[in-house]
Image 1 (cartoon, protein in one colour):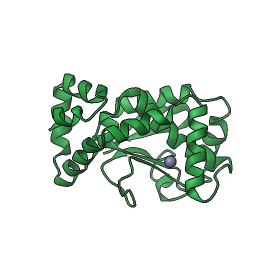
Image 2 (cartoon, protein in one colour; image 1 turned 135 degrees about the vertical axis):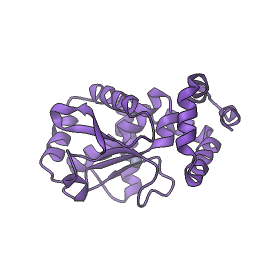
Image 3 (cartoon, protein in one colour; image 1 turned 90 degrees about the vertical axis):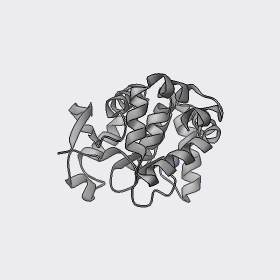
Image 4 (cartoon, helix red, strand yellow; image 1 turned 180 degrees about the horizontal axis):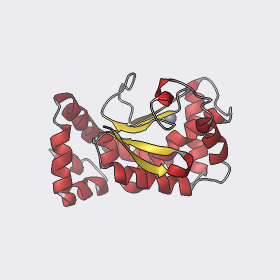
Length: 202
Ligand SMILES: [Zn+2]
């Protein structure tokens, strides 16, 4: 049975434990990200989730909202994370969650929370690329440097492609376990600033 790892249990905020990454680490960083938020961000967002204004099937399956680190989801394409409007769900691509350094995982989480907040407060605008740009500016103003995450993803494009191949081949679970058994390799991957990390990984 799927278990729930607390993020903010007083606000029924949990991550679904699916076992594709270290979800305790993810929950800890999510909690830290929440604690660094501007004070105005969470009341409308928590109200939005609590009241089920974003009611959809994902809400009815457990405490709201659906937060999980998954290997794939409908409509993912090559996204590393996704906020689904009107469902309340926050999905993160488990392999990149696993590899991202802590500070950059916090940026990724803050970005998705940014989308959720904009939806909860009617700040969300169209077209969506305009909303994306405004979300990045807002999240950077919160103190989470979006540019650092973009540079990391650019620098590690080869690595993320390799991860896509591993997921497609069904070998990510073994890779995840082997990285857990070799923390120095995982640490080197997280710290790498260039494609050298790709060679370490292969
Ligand atoms: Zn976005």
